[in-house]
Each structure stands twice: as structure tokens, then as C-alpha cells.
Image (cartoon, rainbow, N blue to C red; front, top):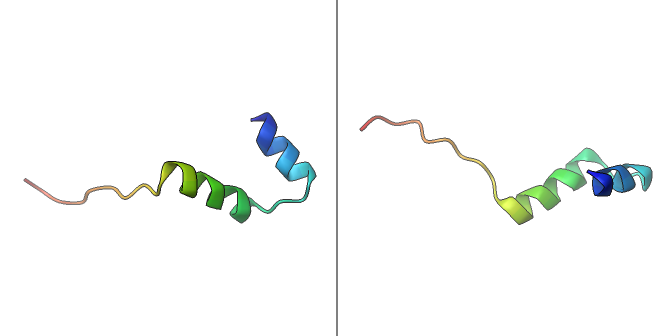
Length: 35
């Protein structure tokens, strides 16, 4: 959390912060099917 606060203080956009999260954790794609 402190890193996000520092990024916001440095005027990073929410999109830039979320891009970092996607790079680190990947993008969530729910499975929409039946077995």
C-alpha cells in the first residue's frame, strides 16, 4: 500500500498502476462454462 501512495504522489495514473499489477499477477479471466 505505501508504494501505491508514493505512486499517486508522483502523479502516476490508475491505469499505470494497474498495468504493473497485470504484469506481476496476470489478468483474471473467469471460466464461464459448464462441465
